[in-house]
Image (cartoon, rainbow, N blue to C red; front, side):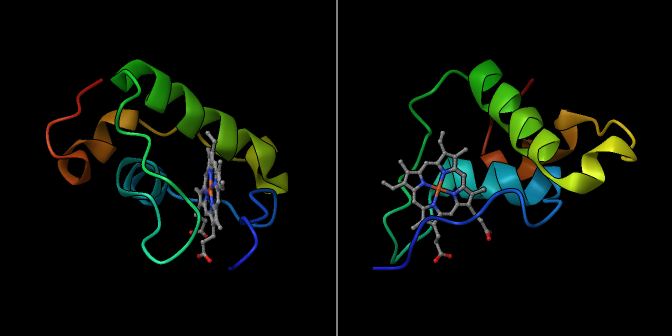
Length: 75
Ligand code: HEM
């Protein structure tokens, strides 16, 4: 069983995070979080992005870009 990802190591795109949270990671222990309200998923995406060292220089990203991968999630 792979270890959980170290979320501090990369600056994940909004789209990649939305995909991982919405679908989980198949074949790993990473569950899907689609039972969470959309605004909680949006908050988690911002939180995970804030963990990376690159976050200090990063421009804010519109979470709405994640919408298409989230099969109907909108925020
Ligand atoms: C709200 C809490 C969580 C968040 C925000 C989160 C976020 C993520 C993200 C973004 C990834 C993808 C990383 C990548 O693409 O490299 C990931 C991977 C992973 N997560 Fe989570 N996760 C959470 C909770 C959990 C829990 C509870 C478990 C296990 C019980 C878990 C197990 C894993 C594993 C094993 C992977 C790696 C999958 C692989 O090998 O590629 N995660 N997580």
